[in-house]
Length: 122
Image 1 (cartoon, helix red, strand yellow):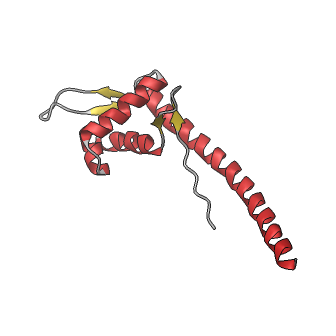
Image 2 (cartoon, one colour):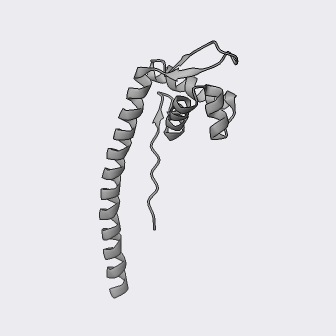
């Protein structure tokens, strides 16, 4: 038996707007310097990546990327400082939350083992 935990944020209607996929997208934008390139590198469409980013920005109420125009391709993007801070905050939160869940799961497994043992003895 194994534990899998997914953490994501939802809006007031319960719709998911933020999870590990958005974090990966932001990190890839930082590496690639472009939303289009980041989407391509992650194997998702530009339209989907744009929608993910827009939904996150709307719900977080601050911009995550600065769009840049110029150069030969007339495209580019850089993370805002708030986005960089948010990524650090999210990773720290996720790590702490998963540590707590793993501890609870270990207790659950111990109790489950005892339950199996009790039933085997009957």
